[in-house]
Image (cartoon, rainbow, N blue to C red; front, side):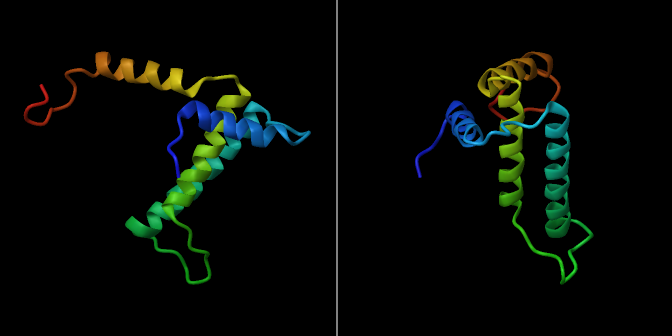
Length: 111
């Protein structure tokens, strides 16, 4: 499968959502969905790496699946607010490069 840019991901999700009359949920509902998906991801991580494995009656999902669900809702949230995630990413990376430049111990040769 060909790699996609963030912009292409946002366009693909928008094309999918645009086929429905309901469109995107409200920002508050989107935040609730994002929180729900984050909780499902946390449950899977706790199952695989934590102290609370699932019961035999609980459906097993993959962390990859839950990250995909979280990404989809995050893209929907950004699209609904007309936020370009590439620009948001670039802004945050610049913030980390400047604000946290000397915060962490660098590996040898990366100073």
